[in-house]
Length: 469
Image (cartoon, rainbow, N blue to C red; front, side, top):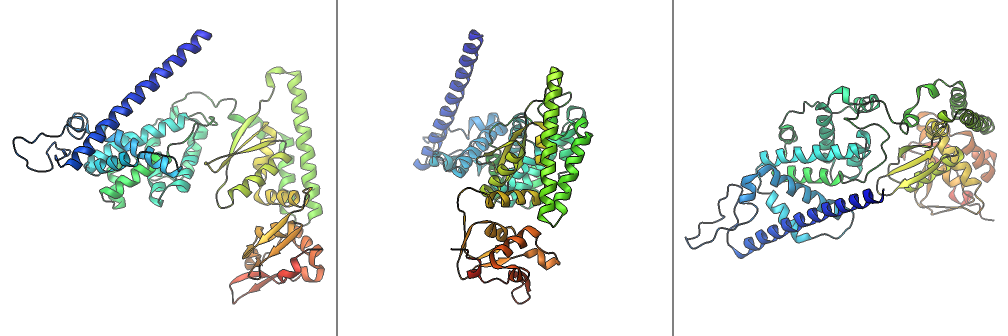
């Protein structure tokens, strides 16, 4: 075992050394080309012609836009696109990079014909997406990263084209059923995976060469993502889903478990009721059943070692704004279900770890139940909490404010209940909480529609909500 580890480390070190040597040589040649351009020697274009006439004594520059480009134009452009994407990724992450080298790369890409650029981009994008699938990423997660981290909206549309054309080139027999279901639910654009799809997409978007280059580079920058655990077997893997993925997406046997059906029914009742006592009773009973179900599973696992459940993982998306507060909300709900949630920095996702039955309870909890858990947890914290309000506090914002022990607000602050526009009342918990702060008669008049302002405001002066004693 020791020899194998040393051999693997040596092979990795050799591969890194080769990659670094290639990168240094590529950078040296680009710097040479940049220096030749500044010295007026006339850089060669894609066709190999120099930038100006020059006499017989003029030496043609031996830059990478000459022989290297003519030998393999798509491969040469592919390498430049990858480098440009890496530079943009480093800039977005506020990391140091060679700005002069980046400028030279962008200038060289700006002189590449669109057809060559599009062909090289197809190779780069499909190669990168293949690596992401093998690295644990799923189509819905990649599209979400493009929507959140792309410099422009066009990056998300390009990423949808990439996923659609990648899927079109694969045979259904090589795809897991869960993967197929997820792709079908994405409503991707039509694609046939025929060569030239980037060129056709550029024409359909009406982009010029510079805009197309920027969109391709931004997409490659977005796709520089870390490896994740595989929750669904990636494309090309044959056979059923792995053990770790089954609990995440639902095991057939667990979906038919009568105990889990009772738990789901209780959680649904807790969400639908307007009475706090009734909701708490349903939630408490559901928690008891979850605990009993977990104990039963543990006893069965002791009796039959082959059926011992293993901890599993789900990834929950957390969109901005307030992603940190939403992540904290998910942590509270996960802990109440005997799971653990860990934020994934820079990815706007949270990784939830637990046993299958507990993860099912977390997934089945709706937003209302999540919010209720946060409000209860905020109210029951062992230290004082203060809500600082400066401006409108609408919906859940108003609920969070009244859940705190103290509220400090500016004169411009207001508390809104947007649901009142639809004729809906805020839930019983919030009304009861406000009644405990300002009195029952005032709490009954909280949701009031203001037609002049076009918003729903709380008819409680801010000073009344200041519970400073």
